[in-house]
Structures are given as C-alpha cells and as structure tokens.
Image 1 (cartoon, one colour):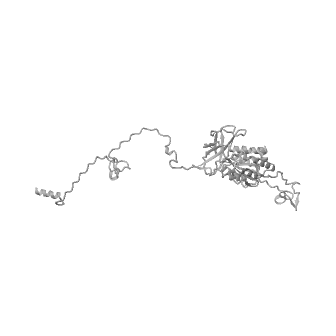
Image 2 (cartoon, rainbow, N blue to C red; image 1 turned 30 degrees about the horizontal axis):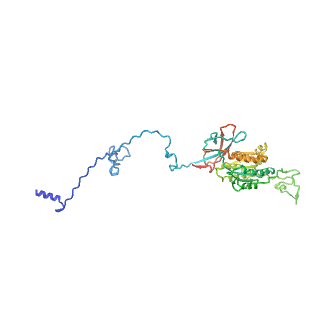
Image 3 (cartoon, one colour; image 1 turned 90 degrees about the vertical axis):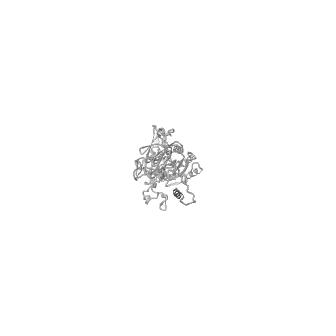
Amino acid sequence: MTALAALLGLSLCPFGVGQQPSPVPDAPTPQPDQAPLTSLTGPIKPGGGAGTESNTSGSADLPMNGNAPNTQAAPKPATPPPQEVQQTPPEEIRNAEQLGTIIHTYTTFVNVPVTVKDSKGKLVAGLTWRNFKVYENGNYEALRFFSVSAMPLSIAFVIDQSVTRDVMEKVNESLGAVQAALTPYDEVSIFTYSNGAQNRSNGFTGAQSARVPYVLAMTKASGTEEAVPVNSGPFASCNVRANGNCVDPNLQSGRSAGNSTFITIPKEIHTLNDAILAAAKELTSRPVERRRVIYVVSDGKEYGSKATYKDVLRYLQQNQIAVYGTLVGDSARWGIGYLSRFHLPFTMYDNRLVSYVLQTGGSLDSERDLNGIEKSYQAIAEEARNQYTLGYYTHEPAFDGKFRSIDVRVDRPGLDVVAKKGYYPSAEQVSNH
C-alpha cells in the first residue's frame, strides 16, 4: 500500500512536494440538438454538393461558412387570399419622372390655323374639335390641340409704291385706318417696295404706340405715271431737244433705248417677291405662340425681283407665315382681276399675290375706293386673329425636309374651309418629349 500511495503521490504531484495541484476543468456543456442541414437533401457526392439542382452547394449552410441554421424551425407563411389581377400599371411606373428616367423622342408638332366661312363669306363660329378632321399626305391625323381663343398678331405690312398715282393717293389716305384695326396685344413692322424692299420701322413695335402713325406717314409716296408710253409713230420721237439731245432722258432714242425711229419702252419693276421675303425674315424672329401674318397692299404685279416665287413660298411654308392682302388698282376690278391671275410666258405676272394667299391659308380682298380699303384692314385683321387653331403630331419623319400636304375638312355642308395647303418641316417645329 505504501508503494501504491507513493506511486499515486508522484502522479498527483508532478511538480514536487509543496505545490498545489491544478484544478480539473469542467466537462463540456451539452449542446441542444441542431436542426438538420436543409441543403443536404440528396445523396452526398465526393467533391460535389447535396441535392439534384446544379446551383445547390452541400456546404452552403454549414456553421463554418457563417450560415448556421436557426435552432428553431421557421413557421410557414400563411397563404394570402387570392387577389384580382390589376389592369392598370403600378404607380411607380406610371410617371417616368418619378423613376428618374426621361425618355427623349423627337416629334413634329404641326399648328394649323383654320378659317371657316358660310356661303355669304361670313365667319362661322361655334364649331368644336369634333367637327374637324385633318389629313396629312392623305393620312388621318388625330387632333392633339384645339383652340378658339383670339391670338395676338405679329403683322408685317407691305405697301406697294409702284402703283399708279391715283391708286397711290387712295392708299396714302387709307393708312390712317391701319392702327384702328389692331389691338394693344399686336405688334407691327412696316415695309415698302417699288424697285427693292425697304424696312421702314426697323423692327417690330407695339401696334398702339405713337411710333406707328409716324412710320406710316413716311411710307406715303407719289406712285408712278399712269400715261401709256408710245414707242412708235409721230408721237414717239422727242420734240423738245437741247444741244441735240432729248430733254427727257427717259425718251432718249438710240442704243439701249432704241434708234432714231424707235424708242424702247422701259420695263416696269414690281419687286413683290423681294418685299415678301424681307418681311418674312423679320417675322421669323417673333415667337411661334403669336400669329405670324404678312399683310400686302398692292395690285399684285411681280417683275424684277431677285428672289423667285418658289423659294419665297417655301420660306413662308417652313416658318408658319400666312399672307393676307388687299388688292387695289386694276387687279381689284371685277373680271379684270380674275383674268390677271393667268400668266402668259415671258411676260410680267399681273397678280402674283393671289398665289401667295391661297397657298399659305390667308385671305384676299379686292377694293377700289377709299372706304373699301379702310374696311378691309379691319375685316382681315379680325379674321386672322379669330381663327380655329388645330394641332397634331405628324407621323412623317421629323427631318426629311419634304413637303407635306394638308387637307382640313368640316362635317357640315355648305361651308368654306380656308387653311394652308401644306408645309415644310423645320427645326422650329421639332419638339423634344
């Protein structure tokens, strides 16, 4: 026993006599039963995972990977009651701006002013958007804008100073009625032409400003001689001479004017195309929200312009400008005014103004006396201001530059619809949405 005790003492006190024995550590605390690994649903393959799906990893929910399963089984979610399928889109995708997304598409918005008259030539009011249909290049276009509100005018007056003296005198006296036909919301620019166009007002000014009567007074002219020149016969030669030359250089014979027996008559100059183009360029600076109008007081003759009719008309149709006018002189006479619309080759255009008015959707009045000319200012200005305004988005390409024809129809019989015949697309009409 002594030997056994000595042996035990040596084993219990390995550090020698006098040292305290180290405490015995406690046994491990028993852990609760763990839930089975959820991902191990199939046979375990060496180097692979459990389960039959390719994206399942056998060690996905092991504790060493930080994905230890819960000790308690998660309750199964309650089955929600069946709901009806919504036909409208969710709220968060109804508005692109709320999502922080803006979709850019380029479209061409077309604005079409329309005048509707009855069989007596009076304006027809009270129509709604349902009464109108617009066709572009033969295709129906749904209306996106409709308005019957009066529009402010940006109007460029073009006064012909190449008319005869008696007609010019009537035009001069009628200019005092121009300002009375306009409202304080309108603005005016004044041009004149005979042999070339002149901008008298140097820009637009308020229609009721004190500057307008002053500028109109500057546009008064004497006109041209009404007498018909004679280029042959006993009255063709110059009877009054000084130092062997004719006193009147306009009747001087020889060289470009003719010879001793024949006098070449100088050609008439009526630069209507140049005057309309100058007024149109001035109007392009005005906002598109205003009605752009060129008002021409002329006999409609055209000869000697640098600009061609085709180029000027394209410019008008591209910049949404309508031409209105009051015909005076011979073009205002019944019968003669109609015949002057026809043009013989290699001759002067006796009435080019009619073509501008018909193509741009304007209106034309023929007056011979002073009272009629003054009333035409009021009537045409009122017509241009109080039009039906239709708007639509075209289905044609935005930048092709081709002419698009427009046909406006009203579902009421016996009415005359006046609108522009078409347009050329421009960058001003292209909107970014």
